[in-house]
Length: 91
Ligand SMILES: [Zn+2]
Image (cartoon, rainbow, N blue to C red; front, side, top):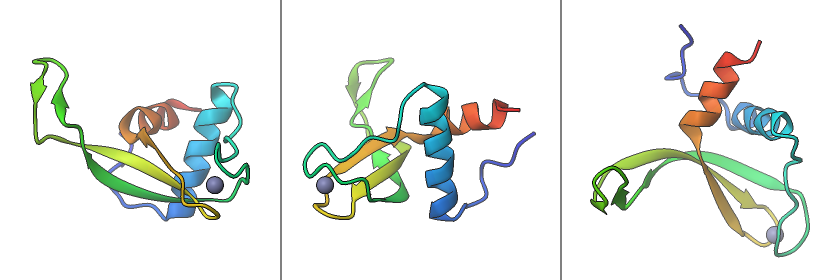
């Protein structure tokens, strides 16, 4: 059993994310606003706002990898658990 609960350095999270993107046949994207490719990452608990199974508001939280452009501060985020699940299943 893998140990996904241990905090990882942010550079390790970025490496896992880049491997995930590569596995999907994608490059880590350039910033859609300023076109640079300098990203900072942080792992946060994000409010989902919606219970998808009951289709009603909720206070539930979801671990997300927040990726912020180091040049213009554009933010994108990805749900983290499926990415970690795939990383754990990789060879
Ligand atoms: Zn930018």
